[in-house]
Image 1 (cartoon, rainbow, N blue to C red):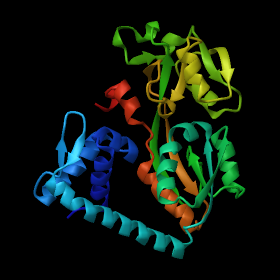
Image 2 (image 1 turned 120 degrees about the vertical axis):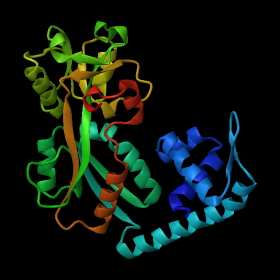
Image 3 (image 1 turned 135 degrees about the vertical axis):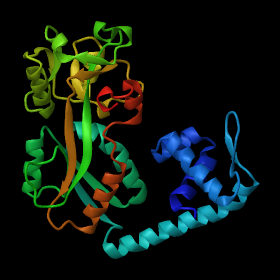
Image 4 (image 1 turned 180 degrees about the vertical axis):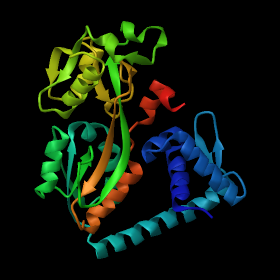
Length: 308
């Protein structure tokens, strides 16, 4: 039986005239999109889309299905709207707290999805320098929901979002990336001057701990308060740096190397005890759509040898 998600995928592909563009709009991978459309075609008994060299168009079967697919999606939207009005989700404001890197890497696609399904809900996002500040904000009741490293203890709802991977960033022509290298031993960078983070930024502690585990204290070429600036400065040749892989944008000019030993950090979302329906709805969206390692970064890094 066709699902609403499959119908949404079909309509989006037809409107975009492209699987690639539709995948971007839906924030899913193209193979996942194709798989769902193929499943819908099998359930329908034949092809719904004609794949042309430079576009996609519906077949006669697809054109016959489209009005009903659009109607089903519209009915579902009206049903969600009615339920949200009863639950108080049609209007309101969500106070969200996170650490700097999560606001850059994990939250944007989640907030995009949330905006599509809850357009009348205002989101107030406050960034924090490190996990301790984040925990203090939640303990003081200044936010409905926090996203970042999990707190040591928490009495309210807590959702595991996975483990984020850190990467070493160097210029494209850096010797550490010669011969197509995808990994680098951190101790081989001991004599380098690093792009570091300002005191108080939680990533400064992550970098210092990684270097200490490799047996050295990093020299500093420059310190930055802005997490987004660190990979750009490293790619420009000021020195290597260590960043969460999910903050790297598509088409980034620098080289990404897996550190050896690996550097990883758990991420979680946690809410105050007895969260309201609005906070619970955002927790569900976050759990479903958060990606701690985006597909474009995974493609650049290649298979993780530690998980082979």
